[in-house]
Length: 155
Image (cartoon, rainbow, N blue to C red; front, side):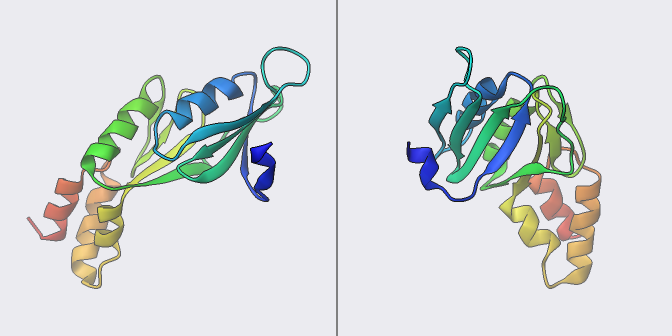
């Protein structure tokens, strides 16, 4: 019971497809894997504990009482445009794009796909340049690092 060794983990409530979601999520990021599956009454597990890029998570197939909202999201800090594009494409397939690097996947879970370079640019000490980068970000759905850098430089 390796999963029980983690004191704190994020629980995502699902209506019957938690195992499927967990398996999809761990396929997206390195250092991700299914830890434990706990079956209650049928063949499908009630709880799936998994590690997502080193972070402990779990799904609970609890029924239709609660729905996902953007009030909680999974935030992924990406290394470059290639990783940003790869995750964006996988997560928006049958999902929905939002603004500023946010999206909702096919399961209704919200994600923030945030390139490290974006964080550097919008928080830069040069306030005018950071503001230009932020204003460019506000116009984007998926973050385009080259366009942010151009805005930062005033191009």
